[in-house]
Image (cartoon, rainbow, N blue to C red):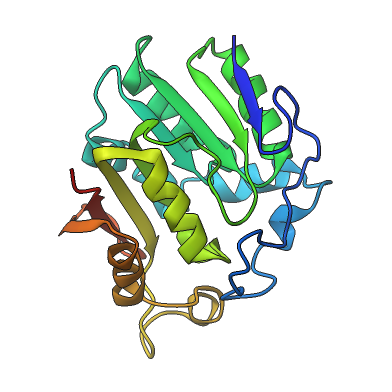
Length: 234
């Protein structure tokens, strides 16, 4: 049976959109970046057309990305900013019956969709987690691996959010961070306006949060995105 965790109440997806104000007092690094995703009337079908299409690089190269994640049977995995659940479903198959996947998002509409799809495909090792904007809302030392794909630039309160991720990851646990390449004079206007910082800044923020940088993974076919591997030191 698929379990549901909300940051307010167990076994409920109400409210359908998480809070926008941080509990920690951290100032927003990009106010309004998640306005669309906080809409309680969000239409998942519209996002399926954007997220799960061959023209989207991280969808087209999903098998290569999955392989790079190094998921093993029995692992506990967090898909942070799960959206329509593309990678949640892939991770569910990869961890097997003895593993578990936490699909974490700030909008319950996405989580409802993930639930329904998982039930349809009999993927019974998925928990959906409705989180606020400044926490991933997972228990301490509960996950072996965290995956953030084209979502970290949406972290409006990165210091507090990364602190919660650091707490949730087991010692020796790994992170794969995929985000858009942002280079002034090179990247397109959408990326420059939408993504608040480039790779070096994001890497430093993860290191400042206590994660050790392991490698920049060169994945064939990724031209718009980069892929970074971090570890929580033991």
